[in-house]
Length: 146
Image (cartoon, rainbow, N blue to C red; front, side):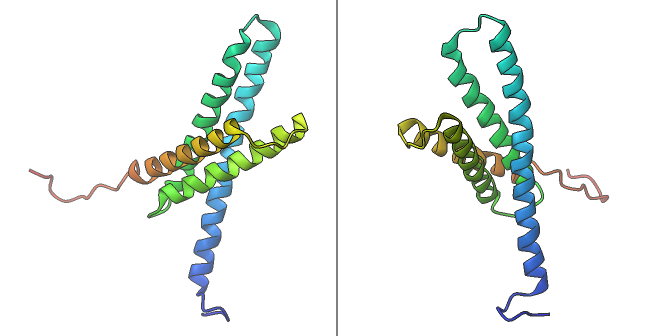
């Protein structure tokens, strides 16, 4: 069946499921980030943890979350995992920027913000590439290779 724009129902469902996979990846990334930030905040509250390590911990947590989300969003697609992962990285960083800017009441864009966006996109692309390339392919039941 073809609609007025020329898209078949299969193409529309495929695009919709791809969007849902990306949304799922973003949700998983925040489900990873929020508990780690909560534990880190607890540690900062009750210990004498040096303040200079806070940005490093935030960057590492963010990168790991985006790589995992990029991997999850790309493990069920056939190609362009880097694109799915990159989209996850962009959306993750936009949401993080909006939330932090709202909290600090400062919507300025400086070198650090641009750097984090670039690193977020690249780590999402890496996660997407890993998602495509680390798939478990079914083994054939035939003879073994020699």
